[in-house]
View (cartoon, rainbow, N blue to C red):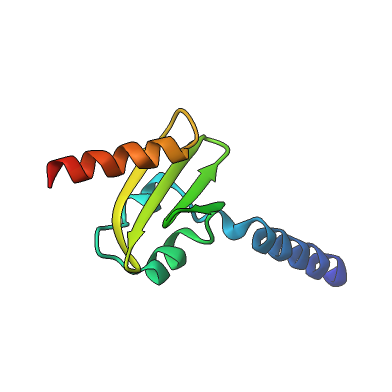
Length: 103
């Protein structure tokens, strides 16, 4: 019996590690702030699903959520969240254009 319990626990731990432990969530996204270091973002959200043009893109399947964390010189310079569709390169460019128009 003890051997079976140990095997089950080991299996659950391995499954958790392979799935990225599910750290990416809206709650964790909300803790990211401008000026935060890339290493701090990675420790909070885990490894991004994609990296594109100094942006890390995260996707959660259920419930759906997608985010992009934008970096400049290794620090957060912006972030985008969507509950309805994946963040794409166009959304990142629109964000950056809007930011540069305001400066």
